[in-house]
Length: 189
Image (cartoon, rainbow, N blue to C red; front, side, top):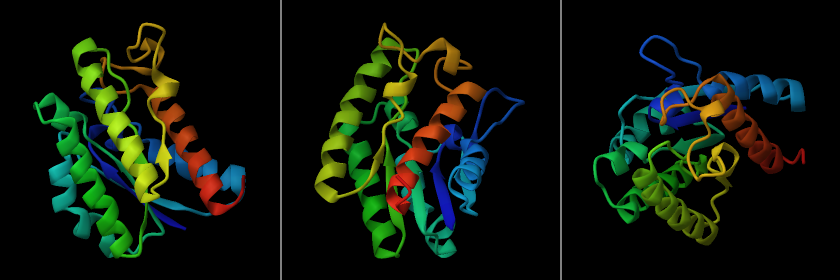
């Protein structure tokens, strides 16, 4: 099975300027150990990328691989740059449509919470729109938000390296959520 993970620094596995721990490596291992599936997960995460950038490089970074699945996780950089949630979701929906048109099954991802209260408000709005549209479009969605939030509504410190990016425990939690989604899609649970 071939999976491409398209996204930004969170997909790339950014922890700090020196360390990386992409969830894609953990996901490969979970698929192999948990389901006996030999999967290659290509990491197409670029730090700082936006959903428009992801859309521009979709053909080169995803569609040319003729993958079985594409995990699409992005939008936090758009929101940090002041883009509206509906514009982020519009770009993500177009990515999903193009994936399907190219024979690749998209998997959407809710944005992870952050340690920044004002940013979390637009993250929550984006996630609500994304959830609604993914249901309408029949796109499976991975809830990367709920497992990482603390009681105060922020990114839990035990999963964060800097209030936006994740640490090894956070990337493991992401991989586990995506494993569960893929397991359901593949038919193993």
